[in-house]
Image 1: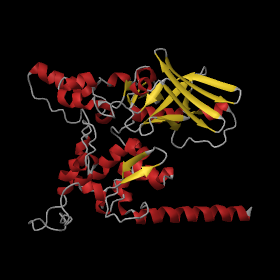
Image 2: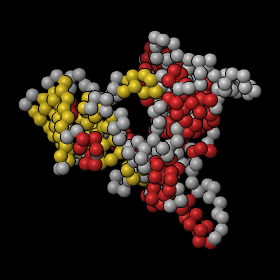
Image 3: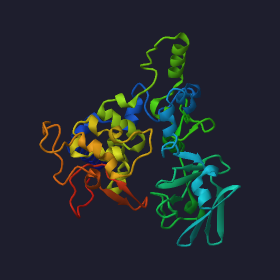
Image 4: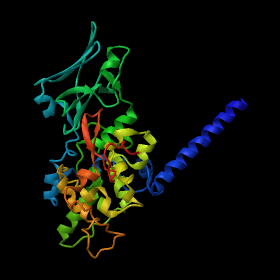
Length: 390
């Protein structure tokens, strides 16, 4: 018994040392929080549980006053983060897809009747009709279905754009499944269902429960700005009375957050520094978590408004892929040599020039699970042949 006690104490000491080492490696981590911690704070935060569905008004109501932003946001990948499988253009454009590993064969056949997902192993075959598709297909699209028990199951295969076909869903590959059922799917726990839909849809968590019936497809206005019923009522009352109503506090404007909270805000779905650390994420897979990698940058320091997500990306517009699109943001910190601004706050640019900065300083890294090269948001001076920095 004494030996077991010593082991417990030793494990606790080691765990504490690991945490301290992590904090020393990232001094600003003390100011950052995990998404779970942010959700415990008062006020709106993405993926938050809301008491009533009536608090949401929908994007159409927002468009009455913000027509341009609402129109462009509808065309983004975030707006298409979820859809019913029957409406997936990916599935209809690829009506017959297949994938095979060992003795298991995966087939995905789409017709006007829906998308049938079938797995065959030896003489055994199981089929299901896909219900949900997650992702617009810019990189990949994954699928969920239900069985007679009413529970959600994740398909073991995903469509990948660069393959134009199926392969294992990231982190779901099985070398030797025990049977056809395990080869075909993974049961999705209810808590995970809540988290997945909270990031891929709007208004899906009501009263602490996942409510599939009345959710809003994709990431729409209120996913980031919070439920809009109070704001809309306030503004409508102002119009009716002919007065200028102060709407402060009736809607959330993430742009007004301090830099650390701003990046954590986006990290609620894209991975905060602590979210990645607590999940044990390592290697090139962490490049998918842009907020985490950004906060690993040496220039992040304790947070800088010029380095937040929205300093480069307008969430109301589709993400731009041309390196030159971000030169303006880079030059807000790095001014050409010889200018009057101080080197402390505006370091000089690289002598090679002031164009396509991110092509060198935010290199693309290949994630084999996603069959895709992600832009690594850890801003740095790169060196040929260097290992992925962690």
